[in-house]
Image (cartoon, rainbow, N blue to C red):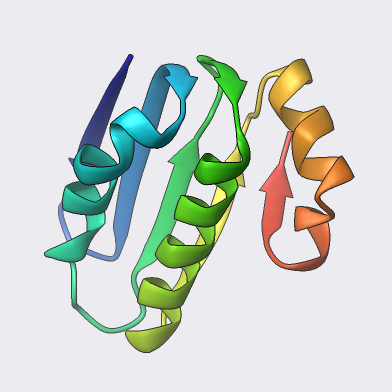
Length: 102
């Protein structure tokens, strides 16, 4: 389980990748990955291609990321969720709240 962050050169995009299980144990690492990015109009790309499991606390953490992005006039895009994670996102109707690119 890990969270990594990649900031693109012009600071307009921040990619956050979650590998393995996405649950409450990653709360602090996940929050740290975006909380210092306060530039306006930043696009946060949440790469879930290597996420094997996600629980309800992870959904809550994504909503906190969304709140942070919107406070900076930015947005969140969920990128390449694995099949099982995408199913959870569909059940939670996150496609109504966020852009999900499969």
